[in-house]
Image 1: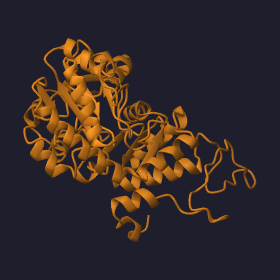
Image 2: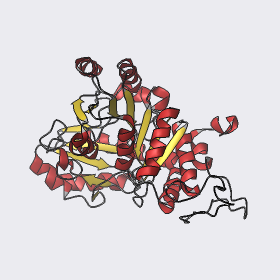
Image 3: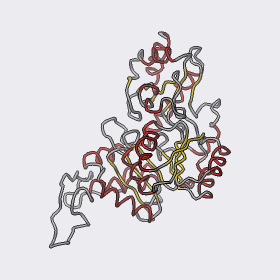
Image 4: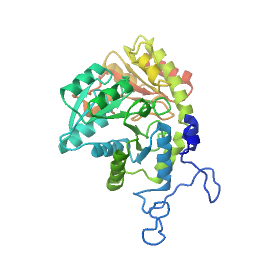
Length: 386
C-alpha cells in the first residue's frame, strides 16, 4: 500500500484496497479466480508467486490486502471460519504447557476450542472478567499466561474492555494480546492502534454482512508471528475458497454504512427495551446506564448492532424468543436482517456449567438494518405475549 493509499479514510480503504481493476479487460470488479492450480514458466517459474490453490489464490490475496488495510495491520490471513482462524493463531502462538487467559463471557465456540480441543494437547485455560483491569492484573500475577484473549464488546453480555489498558498489562506480563473484533468491526474500533498484537474476526458476521458466507480472519503486525501463521494456513489448509473470499470482499465494501445503520437501529431498540416493564436489564454500551458506556464512547466510534436483554426468567426468555416475527430465531449475527438468539441453548450451550455460562434469562438480538419502526413494533408485540 502506498503512503497515499494508507492515508485514505476507512470507507475508501474498504472499497479500494486490493481491488485494482483487471488489467486485461479494465473490469472495475476484479474477477474471481476459481483455478486450483497455476501454470509455471519452467520448473519453479511461478507467476506472481501462485502455484496451487491452498498456498495462494489471487482472490484470497485481494481479500487479505483489504483486511490488512481496514484493520491497520501489516499482515492479514483469511480462513474458512472464525474458529479456523483462532485455532491457527493458537497453534502458532502456543506450545504444550502454555496457558490462555480469556474473558468469562466469551463466545462459546472460542471457550470450547481451548477447553475441549486444545486442552488435550496440554494447553491450559483460565477465565476472568476482562472488563475489570484489577482482576486481570491479579490473574496475571497469580500465574503467567502466553495469550491474553479479549472480546470487546463481549458475546453476549456486551462487556467493554479497555484495550489499551489491557495491552499494557499483557505486554508487561509477556503475553500476546489478542482482540476478537467481530462485534465492533474495524469500522467502529481499531484494536491494533490501541496496542493489541492480533485482531481476530469471524468474517461470517458483519464483514461478510449478508448471512451468505462463512469465514474468519487474522490481522497482525509482527513479522515472525505472521510467518508462523502463514505456514500453518498453508500446512493445515483451512483456507477460504475463492467465492467465499469474493463474497467477503463484497460485503466489506459496504461495512462503513451498514455499521452506521446497525448502530442507529440498535440504539433505538436498546432505549425502547430499557423502558419496558417486562425487561429486567438491557446490555448495550450505547446506553448511559451501561457500566462501560464512557469507555466505549472513547474507544469506539459507534456502539454496534448487538443488544442483549434479560427477562424475569428463563421461561419468559424462551417464550419471547419464540414470539418475534421480523427478528428471526437463528444462530449467528451481523447480517442485514435482524436475528434473535437464545444463548443458553444455542450459541453458548457448550459452556453450560462453566464460568462462561450465560444466564438463562438472557436473549441476544442482532439488530439489522430494516426500518426501525418495524423492529420496535415486532419487539413490542412479542413482549406483549410474555
